[in-house]
Length: 208
Image 1 (cartoon, rainbow, N blue to C red):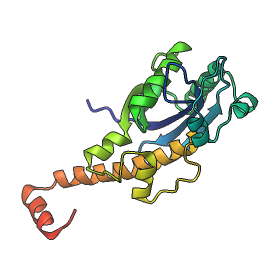
Image 2: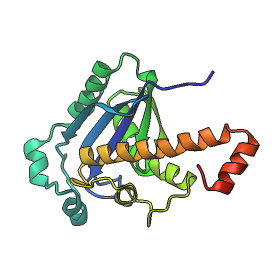
Image 3: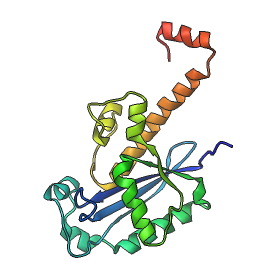
């Protein structure tokens, strides 16, 4: 039986640096997409109050525009943020088994997200394997876009990067890139389903 998701959950996090051993997550965002239309249904976003001792890279703060003061003023305790994410998601989706995840660079984001959820008792509540990583999709379809970064993918597709390096804008940019890559994937599937002679003629004519 082929599993067909009903929803896609696009996840993004911002951190105080690149070392997961010492740099805490500063912001979490999720964007829920309808699997058929790939359009946004709703979203979740929250800053996380850091816990002392706080280690950070100045370059990370400059990139995200999130100051430590802002996190203390607008953030919530980590446990509340992840509980809020699950409450939001369960309020939108009856069965979280119907969700597949979408991300940019699953090697960095997804292990941290899974670990944080597990810390608070949420043992991979949906298909949290990083099922769709737009970096992998770019490699699969031979799209270099001058480097494998979210901003470069957006430039390639002509997608606005206003607000880049904030978790919610980045999640929405990732969602839009995913829509574009999915359209490419579907065209490949459609072509492969054509009879061999039709595929040959299309190739000769320069058609998709």
